[in-house]
Image (tube, rainbow, N blue to C red; front, side, top):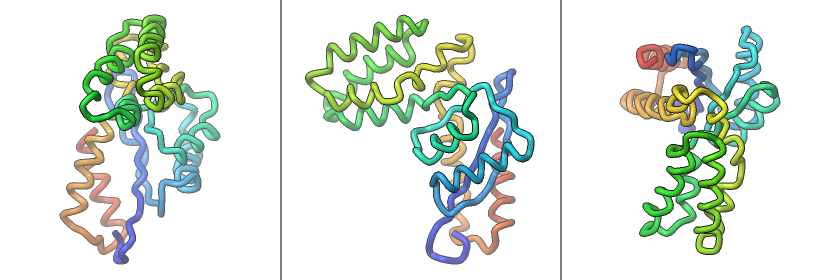
Length: 201
């Protein structure tokens, strides 16, 4: 918050480098996580010299997805599997979520190749297609973008199939920002975010 009652959004981008380390690329403020907000953020990255990354990892935010597809049309895209799994499990009764998650985990974490993952998908659809059709429908949506990581070397999979590292950073940022509550000015807010994010990376 910047003095008023409404909240601004904070946009962050990290790069996963060849050696597996993360590097902070950019921080910016916007009014909401809309097509316009994400579009401005990503076009600014390109204007400052970021070429098309080999792979972009994101959650399912539609504004972000639209902006990524328009600005980085030649990049592979990986949908965060943690967010995807949570979305699927939301369509399953709580008492049966453990069973369904075990079968999901075989697809996203247990397979040793894309071909094996596709076999596990067939098994999942066969077992739960009638019982939990909405969960199966959610699995099938954007499924190709959930399996992109299988196209990369196996020792990279842990780093690139989720945005968990960013989620942990987001929790730490929220904790630090909530202590202050209402920020006196934009530069002070961004400086705090930069300090925490750089330390985290």
